[in-house]
Length: 243
Image (cartoon, rainbow, N blue to C red):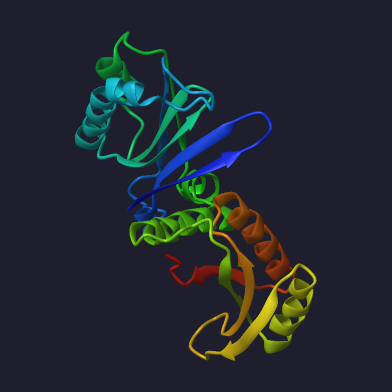
C-alpha cells in the first residue's frame, strides 16, 4: 500500500511516497543494499513538485527503470520523494552491481541524473528517514477520514464535536494529560481500560472545530507532544457526519 505525506519548512516542501507494506518485512536480509536514482524534472510547480504534464512525460521512463531493476537486480522500490525539482527513487537490492549501468541504459541522456548506493543491511533509510513520523502518520490518517467524509457529503467547514484518542500505560498518566489538555480547550470525555492493549488506558478528549487539514495537523502536534510527556501516544480522531 502506497501512502504519501508532505513536510514543509520555510525553505522547501517535500512530498514522500512510501510503500508502507515493507514495514513488517524490514529489514530484508537478502536485500542489504540501498540504491538511489535522482532525476531532474523540467516542469514543476511553486513547491518544486512535478506538474501533471511532467508526471505524464516521465512516467514511462520511471516505470521502465523500476521494471529493469526488479528483473535484473531483484530490487524492490520502497519509495520516492519529490523535492526542489528532483524525483528521488529508492530501492533495496541484493547487490549494487550493474545498478548505475542500468540507470544509464534506461534514462540515457533524457534526464540529468544522480545515482548512488550504500550498504544498509538494517534498512535504516527506509525505517528512519523515509517512514513517516507520528505527526506525518496522522496527516495520512486525517486525509483518509476527510476523503471519506467528503464522499458522503459532509460540510467540512461546519464546526462540530471531534473526538481525539490518546493511549497510556497507566490511568494516572491519562488523567494528567487530560488536565493539561483542558488548558488548551479540550474537554475530557472518558478514560477507559483495555487489558489486551499495550497502551490500554485510553483517554478521549473532545473539542469543537471544523474539519480543516491545517488545524488538524496543529492539533495533532499538540496532542502528540503532550502525550509523549507521559510516555503515551496519540491515536487519531473521529467525528459524526454533518451534512
